[in-house]
Image (cartoon, rainbow, N blue to C red; front, top):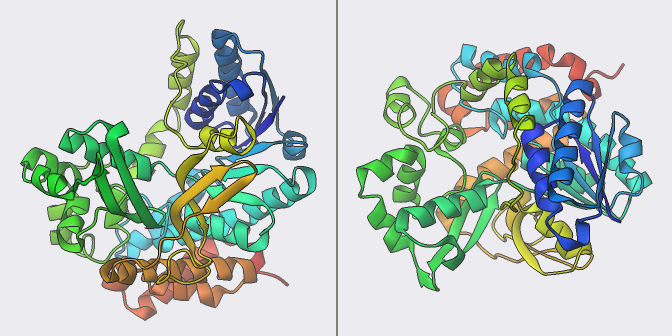
Amino acid sequence: MKKFAFIGGGSFGFTRNLVKDLLTFPAFRDAHIVLMDIDPERLDYIHQAVKKIIKAGKYPAKVTATTDRVKALKGADGVLCTILAGDVDVWKHDILIPKKYGVDINVGDTRGPAGIFRALRTIPVMLDICRDIEKHCPKAVFLNYTNPMAMLCRAMQKKFPNLMITGLCHSVQGTAEMLANWIGAPIDEVTYKCAGVNHQAFYLEYKWNGNDAYPLIKQALKNPEIYKKELVRNNMYEHLDYYVTESSGHNSEYVAWYRKNPEALAKYCMDGTNWNPGHYAYILDTYLQRKDNWRDSIKEWLAKEDINLERGHEYATYIFNAVFGDNTLFKFNGNVMNYGIIDNLPYDCCVEVPVLASKNSLEPIHIGKLPDQLATLINTTARCEVMAVDAALEGDARKVFHAVAFDPLTAAVLTLDQIKEMVDEMMEINKDYLPQFYKK
């Protein structure tokens, strides 16, 4: 019997789908699933959901729910993390304060001033989790889904190099499927090589039955209905020659070109996109709308008589199966330290690259050099993330300022004096979550 610990298991959608996938693998049908969350109400809901999945599939698995992280981790073979450090009443300021200064943010969970402060709050918690893993299940595979992905993974991998840690994101496989749909290709006939940093990785190759499919993508974008679905990404592709992984709303806040003035916002960010309208504070609005009615959809799912038990496309369970299940090799895009993987990005930044999962092993695949235009863009991103992580690990507020100062969107709309004032205000409002910066 393999043991899987879900840290932040009250993340209902993530945990439910990952458990469903996990139990479809023969090696894990009798797994012990331990759900851990600090919110007893959410924990109770997901406990009910997992019991429902086990019963529906007639699996010989068992499930335990606990608010004790050590209890969850003891003897675990696999660990999944979907935590959020601070409720919306905390992280809303990541978006509201920059807006006051003129930095218009759409999501704010990955980079820029909002992503950096989310990282500063979350890194200490993630390092505590790693300490518990090192003590109670040092051979476990630790898969992180919590954002900001690159900064969290760099912090953990830098401080705990002996643990088997990687971070997973939907954007690589999700965009690959989107592009396949646009060109009419079955996704199982598509192959690709994708590399960069999380949410800013690019398809260096995208092939259909072994043939370059980029000409087909270019042709598809001549259809106005397709083009407007991803205004920012399609515009980036036209000018940078490679397609980026994360959605237009996200990407608009990572670069200097799309949100720096009302004209750019109106042209690129207020129409289209597959799931995320590019308007200001999209995710904040979504969370606030769900704050009082999130229970309704959960109760609706729990009341269903029939539930879908088919395996989905998340990487996590395939990775577990490759490393300590039936050892079927599995290649995925993961977040790892750049120890000579991408030659023209900073040596110890966190990169998102192909990784081969096999028995007791996660091995990143060497990429070499990125095209110059991509390396120029991503270097700024990566170096800001390196500074932000070092700031968190060292308790160095000056590095926080420098990391924000060179963020492309922030730098496009604010002076250095304005950025310093904004960062100071964000530091003050997050003071209770940043003890490393306020040592006596």
